[in-house]
Length: 244
Image (cartoon, rainbow, N blue to C red; front, top):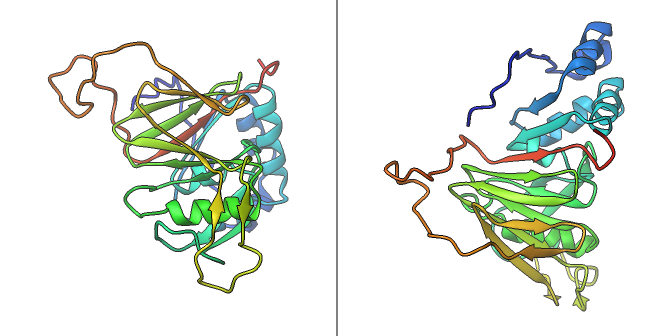
């Protein structure tokens, strides 16, 4: 996907020492940037490197002031406040299937997971929501972007899909009463499955019905409406209302 940036600078932070030692040049780079793209790898490494540092505080402040922040793979997961740090594959939620850590908190109302379909991660996202059903769960396929506007509207772009799980109306779970590895009961969940062109109102927690359209194969290169294909899953978080 072409980002159409006039200028691109790399802020190289590979260790916690790098983050702690980041000087005025690094902060100035963020101060004048209109967008920040966080790469993938290990979200636990990203959170352990950035957590509690001035660089992380600067990223939050710049985002609140209007800077767009995007992340791919682990960088997407990092944008959550309650971040999925580690977990196992599988479609069934199970006790202790997932471990959470604190992320950057730029999307505090979401728990974001990635490589969703290919790595079979529905179970660990549901397990995370059984621990705390307040946030929305968002699972993003490869080659797909979830774009969050400042008004709280999520839109989908790409060849895959985005699943949104609302567990706030959950009537029952036994996640607290079972043993490690046992399946978790969860009743009263709401699931929305969004493909390219679909939108979701994060504030009202409901999908926005798209207008009638001709459904085209997003991978058909003959189609003039074929969306750009991302190399990985992405989350793009725009500035909050009033931040511009």
